[in-house]
Amino acid sequence: ARASQSIFSVTKDGAIVSESEPGQPATVGYISSDALNTGGGAEVQCLSLHKMESILGAASGTSSPQSATNLAFKVLNVSPGHGEVAAPVQAILMFPDNPSNDKLPLIVVPHGGPHSCTATGYIPSYSYLCRHGKYAILHVNYRGSTGFGQAALESLAGTAGILDVKDVVHAVERVLESYSQIDPSRVGICGGSHGGYLAGHCIGQYPDLFKVSAMRNPVTNIATMVSATDIADWCYIETLGPGGYDWNSFRGPTREELGVMFDASPIAHVDNVKAPTLVALGMSDRRVPPSQGLEYYHTLRSKGVRTKLLVYEKDGHAIDRVASEADHWINIKRWFDEHL
Image (cartoon, rainbow, N blue to C red):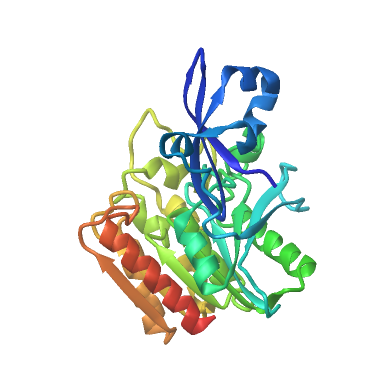
């Protein structure tokens, strides 16, 4: 498996590049023009750190930083049989140190967006859960993710809550079949925004597979979100599909469209949920209004499902103020420790 690289700057003398892996924070380095030319064309993106001089090392006289967490990872490609567009679903599986060879619980992480992707780079929050919680982590790039072709990306429009959910479940099932060190009875799911939307769908559509859930600013009811969000276009396109709404003439959703949006939402499956569910909300979120998470939280409570609400008054969609980010990730770990 390869590391993830990003180019910061390119000059006639070389390039400033950062490189990280799921278990290793970024190293910023310099690749000389000679090394770039040696790589040749498309091979430049695959240059390894051994061809880079660490800027930190050059400035301080020290060697390049070593892995801070030493977490193993694998890049997996699975080929689901469902969906109109045949495209691989790629996933990144992280393993904690496990000298006792105990069965590992698994936390599944569908990314937000939905039109983004998880690369093989360092994400502090999931490295924390993997190393300190001793959880295997599975990042899933379902169809609709960027980087796998335009047809695969657009295939999610009109199939949200179906195609992406099936892709996540298919990836999980392949991992459980292939890795005996993972405990199939201890599978949880964690996601924010569209990842929280998928977490809600998974615990509702597959309640016997997913035992615990943690959501951050989740989309839970598109029918109640469409008139209160700054991305109403997402609500229409992902549920109705391309061409389902006339953008030249503004109007509110019709009764029929609201029904389609409801059916594409996690709230449509909430009666099946039995997984203890943590909901974290940034109360200044304009992307996914906090009313989405509140509606889901109170619905779970009314049905007797174990749930907990974390509220961050000054945070927006990302919940990324320093104190808030630290607090909610510590609480997420404690939630999984307790219930998984």
